[in-house]
Amino acid sequence: MYAIVRAGGRQEKVSVDDVLDIDRVPDDAGSTVTWDPLLVVDDGKVVSDSTELGGYKVTAEVLREVKGPKINIVKFKNKTGYMKRQGHRQTYTQVRVTGIGAK
Image (tube, rainbow, N blue to C red; front, side, top):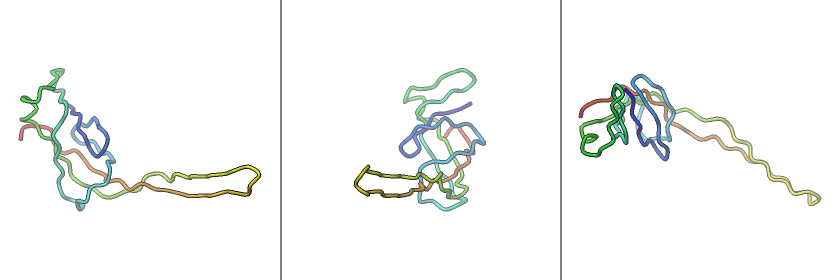
């Protein structure tokens, strides 16, 4: 069984015991996050109708905050002596999916 959920600005395919990095949520480690699924596949049966999906919830446990890879930004203009360096590391929240099922 797996589900498609909207976590942050992206859609993620999740199943039970998956660990994934989502956009940062302000919850503490050990707390629970719930999502309404957009699509659920259970033993080959696809549930995408909003009336049937009303009975499903996806729950996940917040593990910790993590940082993504460093992104180096370099701006350079030839023959003018202009060079600028900048870096960025996005913060994510790491969660483990604990259940997909009825409310």
